[in-house]
Image (cartoon, rainbow, N blue to C red; front, side, top):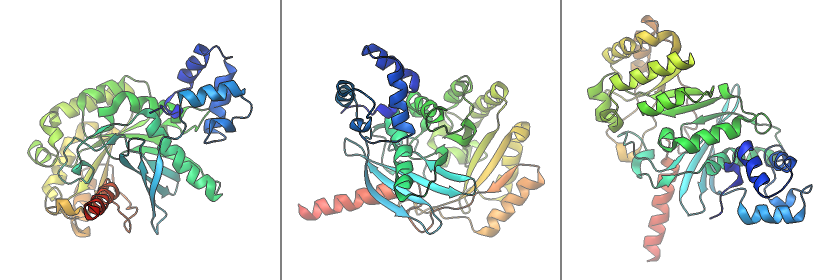
Length: 359
């Protein structure tokens, strides 16, 4: 399979062009065609000589993804199921926010983190996505709106889809630099958020990268016993190690960390859990923020259900009384396959059922 040219940063593209014996300005022309004019074929790059477009087509593809399914929600959320060149499936979500169009990208095929409430982990990790495959998700969402003639642009990106981004660290970092480039998509660093389930050593590495993107940590429990029971990753990186890494990140970058906390009915939503969470984040309160997230039920994890409003409100009140910056996240796409990984999982079940019937 030819790699996607979307996987090259502008510096990497310039280096490749130079190695082909071409003039340096050719890299800028290609970059402009890809991210400003957003063409989908090398032949469309009409100011390049034919021999060079032939070479590009020989070495690279542009779009490595095939659109399988698009689901549109009444609230404007759009969920995409894309097929990779090897036939594997991934999900991407576009959420319409008051501040613009936000795209949530996937970084791995499947997930090995093993969160017991999550649809993403129903299918174990098959492989990492390349930086080109991650970038192509943003480009195809942008193409979707370009073709609608709505003159809207993707303004925000969250790396929170299927997979653990820091388990695919190098490709994710490359992707961040590609979409942040001010001569391309120019998505501002402060409009980009990367989420991790808590790989402490990678949080420390990320602190030293010099990128200004936002960091979110999927916390979901305020003590080791509970967190280990619902998030296997906590056995390798318990809260003590995780918060040491978070403190290092804050000290190094002086940037705020967001904690994601899915509200699971009568599991992690007790008032005493809220107090534990307030105590846990006390030392970094000025540079931390808590997102309380409504749970999207997954049939395979029927031991969990969404916390009712009164329990969420009580949890929120405890946090606010302790001075914690927090918000209950607005729900998106409730009328489609809302849970992360759900569309992919359901599609794979249907595909397998069809194959079984044909057999």
